[in-house]
Image (cartoon, rainbow, N blue to C red; front, side, top):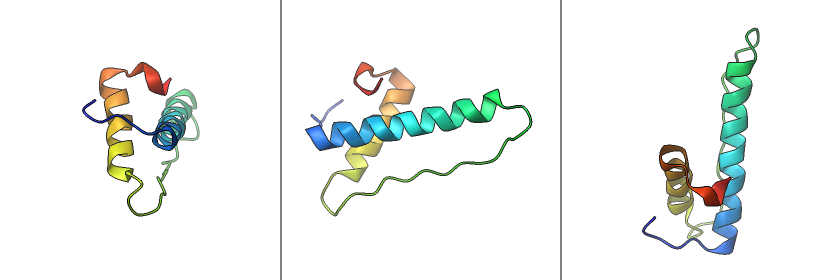
Amino acid sequence: MKFELKEFQVSAAKELYRTIRKAVCDYYNNPYDKFPVACSLRAPTGAGKTIISGAVIEGFLQGVDELE
């Protein structure tokens, strides 16, 4: 990743990553109740929501160990 995440950004990225993984696993592992799930990332202006989201996407595409 091009940017070094701050401690609070790493925490937010880990939480979002785990939430999305759980939603995907629940969706595919339950053959009867396939409901769409929404999750959101809330942070104040200037907290780096775009950077956090980018880290999460990178985690899914490249398998970043920091988010596990």
